[in-house]
Amino acid sequence: MQKIIRIGTRDSELALWQANKVKRQLEELDFNTQIVPIKSTGDLILDKPLYEMGITGIFTKNLDIALLNGDIDIAVHSLKDVPTALPEGIIQAAVLKRANHNDILVLKGNEEFLGQKDGVIATGSLRRKAQWLNRFPTHQVEDLRGNVNTRLKKLDDNTWNGAIFAGAGLERIGKRPKGAISLSWMIPAPAQGAIMVTCLEEDAEVVAACQQINHKDTEICTGIEREFLRRLEGGCTAPIGALALLDEVNKQIVFKGVLLSRDGKKKIEVSKKTSIGGHKYIAKDAANQVIEKGGKLIMMEDQGIEKAYTIFSTKKLSEAQKKLLSTSIKAEDSDFIKIRPNRIPPKTVKYPIEHVIITSKNGVEAILHNFSKDELQFKNIYCVGRRTKKLIEEKIGKVTHVEKNAEKLAHYLLDTIKEKEEVTYFCSNLRLDTIAKALRDTNITIHEVFAYKTLHNPIKINKKTNAVLFYSPSTIQSYLEENNTDKIAFCIGDTTANEARKHFKEVHIAKMPTVESVIASVNQHFSKQTDVSL
Image 1 (cartoon, helix red, strand yellow):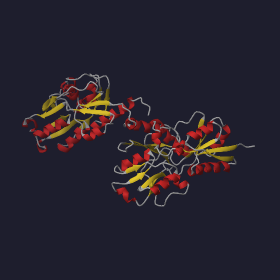
Image 2 (cartoon, rainbow, N blue to C red; image 1 turned 120 degrees about the vertical axis):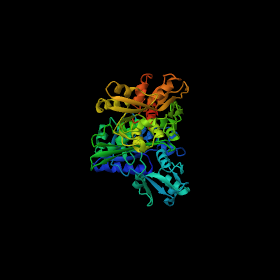
Image 3 (cartoon, rainbow, N blue to C red; image 1 turned 30 degrees about the horizontal axis):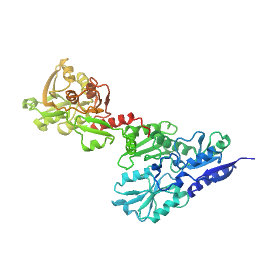
Image 4 (tube, rainbow, N blue to C red; image 1 turned 90 degrees about the vertical axis):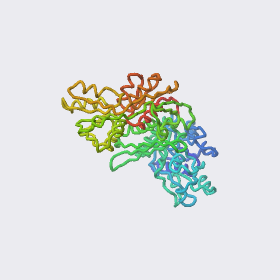
């Protein structure tokens, strides 16, 4: 006689609907089944937000126990409620075809409040709350717990403007109101809209039965989303969203992920695409990208974990730049370099100059301090750095060639400028000798014009400082007059890093030659340093 498959489920209307869907699909394959309702901890405790209860698998724990005790043969869950690590001996046996993955807003009245300052909505989800506050920072979010019917009744009984639900949940039991708004901008919980079946790994007969109702495409997409969640180690205590979709036309998997601070003020979003079948590393790459942007530090801050680092910037940071740093990182700053333009003799630019070298924005500003654009007759301008290039082309004229650092520019000039030609180099009294020395060693004549003075302006920094941010070789030289080299050096570019390596054991280079990129490098480094389990 064929075994009766006992289907364990929570006893809410939605959970029973999902269990009956599994029951119907198994019975269509001629399996005998029986529904076994079981209460969950999440259903019993309704007066606290989920993330405050500190229980992993709050809606699955009692079903797991029933499985392990042999009281049921399979358990049916909303996959978004299932922890990414299943108890030993229990496996994912099937995932049914996904329904609507979007969140929806059920309105109490009309949607006019969306454009107003004082809107009030309700949700028990930390992810929904954070994304709502990120989009509507002046609104108020009230906690809303209970099964679908309980939450709908609470919405009716309160003066809130609306409440957020999973679209699939209301649609499955036929209770989606006509005026509900699909929140397609809100990235859903990993695996939202999918139904999962678990069973004991050792029960080969049940495993084989469940595999027949598994929907492979949904399994792949929800697997990517849950892997992203697992790698961020967020569980129910961090606002994490993830969505992977199959693009059949382009034969691609398209992934979106998000991590926010609980108050919604900080948000890190990632997007990835990969070919169908080539998705093995997409979740890992996306999670790593979030961590590199400071994601782990955001989670630490939300949990009140004290892991503060102190960094010192050798030039003043703007308020906007300081806000890019995690609040776990204390920033101090001071201008270690002061610039004073020199008087440049008029005869310097009296005639057209064939070759001109400018290696910094300070050089550009010093030239313009002495001459108007119309007085300058530069035929070929060579510079270092994209920002210097941009300023030159805005204020002086077309740049012939730009390089990332002085060494690379020196090599280019040696290959480009002919022997016995002359070059005019607008520079500071303090500068690396790379370009001048390279040209002096040839038959090229170099005229050095000291367009500005670079004055050191160091201060002694706190011994407990973990890292120092440098923006030029001169800032390093200034720093060394008052401080030691037992810190980590974060540098804006190759030229600065090459100077830093002469003195510091650990040197990091920003991906782009900008202050913002240096700050991103700092966030990435200290995010990886923490070994705190989140």
